[in-house]
Amino acid sequence: MSRPVIAVCVEEGYSKLTRPDPPAEPTYVHIKIRFNDIEEVNDMHQTITLHMHMTVMWEDKRVSVVETGSNDTKDQGKVLDEELSRGLWMPDFAIYSLKSFDYAHILKRLATMKVYHNSTLMYSFQTRTTVTCQFNFDKYPMDKQDCYFMVGSYGYTSEEMVYGGEYFHPQERQRPLPVTVTIRDLKMSERKVEAKNDTGQVVAIYSVYGLIFHTERGINSFIFRTYFPSAMGVFVSWTSFMLRQDAVAGRLSLLVTLTWMQINIYRPLTKDSPPSLKVSAIEVWVIFCLVSVSAALLEFALVIYKKSPLEQKRREHVRSKLLSKISSMGDRDRSHSHEREKHKGKSLKDLRGRVQHGIGHNPAQGCCAVVKNCFDTNYIDICSLIFFPTAFIVFNIWYWMYYKSQDEKKNG
Image (cartoon, rainbow, N blue to C red; front, side, top):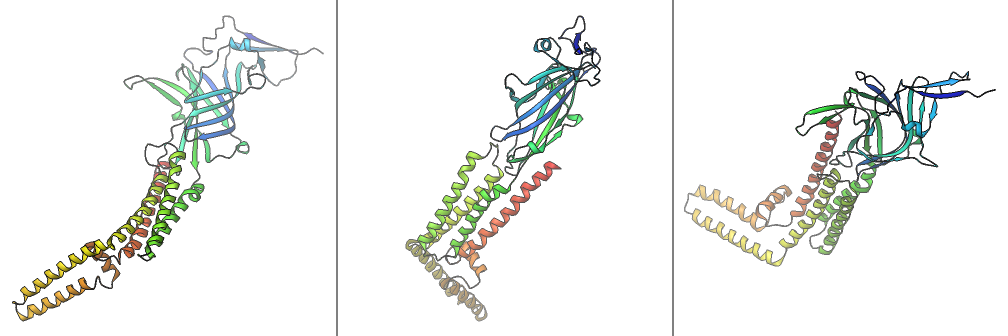
C-alpha cells in the first residue's frame, strides 16, 4: 500500500512582498490566543507577563495543497519547512507596547507553519511576552487597573488589512496572583490605532485585535498589615489623655513608642508601594495616623509647659492683673445708683469667683474657657479626649466615602 503524497504548490510569479488579496480588498488576519498562564502583574514596572500559545491565520489563494493516494477527508494541513516558510508572504504582525518577546525553546524553537487545502496558512508558536501598561496608583491599594494587549499591523492600514480573533484562558491552570485578573475583548469601536503627525492630524488608521486585562486588588491583606495596626496605635494614644498629668514618664514613653511604631509602618510604604504622581490612598491613611499620634505627644508637651513653675508664675501674674482691673472697675461703679451698683456688684462677684476658683463645673464651659483664656490645664486632656476621636471618625467617613466613590465613578 503506497503512502499518500502531499505537495505544496505556489503560483508562478509569486512574490512574498505582495499581499494575497487584490488591492481593493483587505486581507483578513485571524488571531487565536490561548493563555497558558498569566505569570506576573508587576506594579513597580507597570508590566504584565504572559505565557501563551498564539496562532496567526490568513488565506492566500496563491498557495495550495495537492494530495494524492489518500482517502482521508480530514484536512490536517501540511507542515512547511523553514526554507519554504521564509519564501511566503506573512502579515506584518506587531504587539503594541511590547517590552520583551521570547520564543519557547526545547531542542529548537517551538513554532510551526502549516498550509491547508483551502489555501489557509497558519503560523503557531509559544511565547513568553511582557507588555507595558499605564497604571494609576493614586487610589492604591483600592485601585482598579486596565492593561491593553493589542496585536495588529504596523505597515498596512485598515483598508489593506483587518485583524480579528479570539482568546482562551483556562482558569484551572492559572497560578494565584496578588490581584484578580479578568480578560475581555476590545469593542469593535476600539479595534483601531490612529497614527498622527506632528500637528495632531490623523494620517492613517490601523486595524488591531486586542484584549483588556482588568486587575482588581484585594484589600483584606492591607487591612491586617497596615490599616488595623496603625488604627490601633491611634486608639492606644487616646489612653494617654486618661492618665494623670504628673505621670510624665508613663505618658511620654507610651506616646514616643506609638510615634515610632507609626513611623515604622510608614517607612516600608515608600519602598514597597508602586510609583504614583500623587499621595496614594494608603499613604494618606498612615500619614494621618502618624500626625494623630504626634499631635497627642505635642498635647502632652503643652500640658507639661503649662504646669511648669515659670508658666505658673506668669499665669499668676496675669491673674493678679486681671483681679486688680476688676477691683478698679468696682471702685468706679460705686458712684452710680444703688440699683445699678447692686447689679454690677453681682456681675463682679461672679467674675471674681470664676477667676479665683478656676473654670466652672461644666466640662463644656471649661473647654471653651481653656481655649479662650489658657489659664487652666485641667480640661486640656478632657477636650483632647473629645476632639481626637471626633477628628478620627470624621476622617474615616471622608476617607472611605471619597475613595469608594471614585471607584464607582470610574466603573460607571
